[in-house]
Image: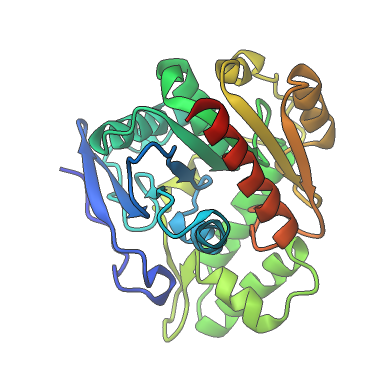
Length: 308
């Protein structure tokens, strides 16, 4: 059985997101929230968060999709193992994109979803590409946000440093201050209250002497092998696993995860892809603007007509 998460299941950040659990061999489990109505000929929208992230990153997006596509449009939000309310992996070496893709495939099978529109933030997009390597027929379309065949090592190092700094905080005041400074870089112009709401997606700080992460700290340990000056080789074969899927590519203007030149090369290799840049924010994308959510809704409608 998977190790139980130390995260309280009734946190305000998860309000309105009841979950069920899908288990897979090897002691892995995912927490799954299903909204709308599966079936009825509509392609479900399946949302996959980033490296240490959880389904709360998609709450605003899910609301926007209900408003734009209808209350019954099916959508699935997932906490992969080690994140949010999912179980933690006993074998920490299994925190990899291929293993997460196997878990994602298990979730789709458990929900009897044969084909879906997959939305991935950051590493969630890499998980979708890894799914394309093992279950390409399940991906009717992919929406990749700050995700591609090459992750900027500078972003990985910054994430490791920032998360380590917060985890080492010795008081609520210290943790809140650190989180506000970190988030203000990615979301300029947001006030303290807005930044605190974003921080609550990753850490519980209120009334605590030390912040409680909403993820297995072993995920941060997995980033220790990277340096900012590393030169990664783009994994274009991984990107090519989505060759038969309709594709939408989004990049946040301030991201340090996906270099602009890589994003442009992705678009060059897939001239049929819809592209969009989200202004004045970094990773993960908040998906709270009318322009980007409207563009995504239009793309989903197009794919439904094409492949539904």
